[in-house]
Length: 248
Ligand code: 13P
Image 1 (cartoon, helix red, strand yellow):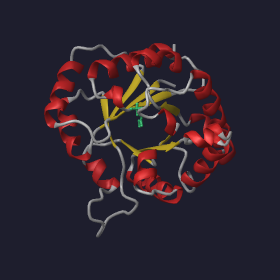
Image 2: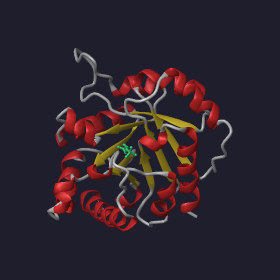
Image 3: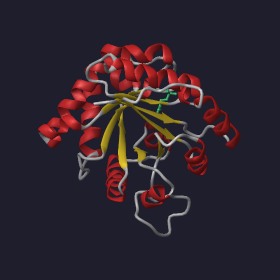
Image 4: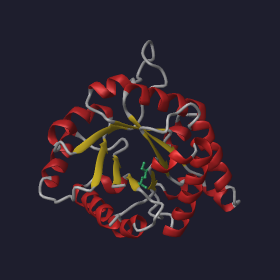
């Protein structure tokens, strides 16, 4: 399985920043055996599509839980496909936290995304207090059960993003990440059966060029979902390069 490295720009950037990113990207060498996806804010999708080379795929950070209709401010999965997206992140902890998204809604979004032809990146992860209380496995198992209800195992990626590691500079240790990825893969096997082996499980939470290699070296880590370090082409490229060599 080639490593999957996804940039989640969150609500950052500007049109001028897309140009700078693309220009710098043009001078880096990315091995073929790594899959790269960039998820900019909706309004920059077309700019990223036009500025970046074809092998860099396009994704969105969210989609609506409805197919179409009177849902002001929402963007449907079908519209993302029309905009050139092949991927969409659903259930990011920031959506769960600031927009009160439930597992049920996340599952609905993932289903609609898959129906539209997108690959759904379903995010799960525990909060600090839950980890300190030793509840992280149970919390993540419950999120998976709810968020994957009715979701196909094809065109599915699971992202493990411990909330305490996001934007803090404190990544989970390779051991912590590897243990949780193993647990997640076990949960997926229970949910989908043996075919669940094909579902990539990627890690997110303060992934940096300095820490990427040791994370990618873990057998159960199939890629990374990168926030802050994906905003600059050079650091994102270094992570992608680590993704390629880490899988050899
Ligand atoms: P950081 O890499 O900034 O910690 O963000 C991780 C994340 O939330 C990616 O979706």
